[in-house]
Structures are given as C-alpha cells and as structure tokens.
Amino acid sequence: MQPQDLAKFRKLFIEQRQVLLGNQDRLGWNEGSNLVLSKEALFDEGDLCAAETEQRVQLRLRDRERNLLKKIHEALDRMNKGEFGLCSDCGDTIDVRRLQARPVTTLCIQCKEEQERKESTFAQLA
Image (cartoon, rainbow, N blue to C red; front, side, top):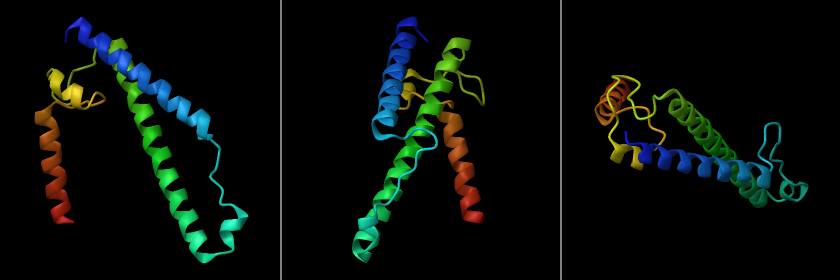
C-alpha cells in the first residue's frame, strides 16, 4: 500500500473516532450511563410503546457505534504494526478499492466471500 493511501486512511479513522467519541460525550453514551424512560411515558400505553421503541433504537445505535469505534482502534493498531491492508486469513494484500468501501475490513474479497458462503451453508443447515 502506498504511504499516501495509509495517511488517508489514518486521517479518516481519526476523524471518525473523533465524531464517535463526540457523540458519546454529547449524548451521554459513556459506559455506565443508562437510557431511562420518563415517568410520563409510563402512564399511556401508546407512549410507553413509543418510548420503548425509541430506547431500543438508541441502544442499538450505541452498540453499533461502540463496535465501530473498537474496529477503528484495531485498524489504527494494525497500521502501527504495519499490518493494515493485509488479509487476516490468507495474508494477501486487501485491494485499496475494498478498503475504500469498508476501511475497517480485515479480509480480502476472496476470504470474505468464502466466509459468507460458509455462513450461508451453516444457516441453511440450521
């Protein structure tokens, strides 16, 4: 991978990390914080359902952002070790176009397709 490509991905990861950490601070999504339903929502069944749905959406969003933040940290760590852009399964170089589409990926397209085939086969057997 070219040094300018690495620099571009590093900048992207740092910017994404800052946005995600900003969201956590702004929305109070740090560890230990809870989304609590208001007392007003508990009186009306319709409001309670809407509040619970909103809570589930917020929890799912929090989880997705936490997972993405973890993947960004792992990608930056791989960069520091000189392993960014290498497939974790076969060791081949991951095409830059794939990294542009999914920067936190750890698998080349061939290994990802194989993984999806195995998952599909397993799902059909279950």
